[in-house]
Image (cartoon, rainbow, N blue to C red; front, side):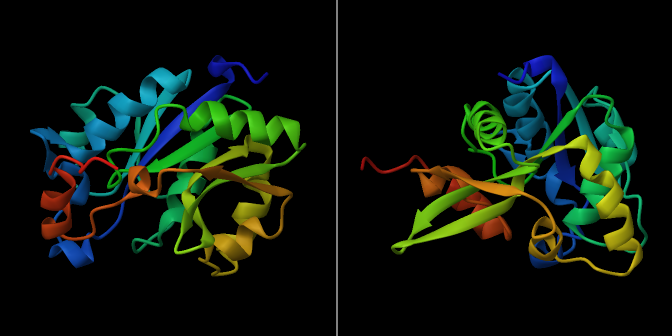
Length: 202
């Protein structure tokens, strides 16, 4: 099994927050706690080390107590820019990423990604959920070997930004999670308020 100490966790909070009116999404409160801090606290027990990727309000993020790294690429280049920032600073063999706007992601996320990565001799493990009868990947919830940084540097320097095109260059495994709601994200303030509502019994 991959040891927890060999995994660095990265919270992605570097987006523009366009659909949330341009506010810094990671600093919006979820049950009274900033989204990015909530993600950090949920991810921390699952990994050996944690980092945050953010591009604005750096003082606020630094107050969370984890190493902070802005995008390695200019102009809010998307999740792959965050992946690259994390990989450039990662000192462990593995990096796992989660977005700041999905505050209910599974507490066994990293364990299951790590198991699948090793069992399938993969380079990247990606969470997936069953929605409307079809499997849907959740590509920002992924675990990767740190050595994939080499291809990511080339890919992004060519101006490419699509996660699925980059992951297609690698041996990938999809890891199925039953509860799609645990990956629900808040793109708008209304969606954030909805996430705060108690879940109805299944």
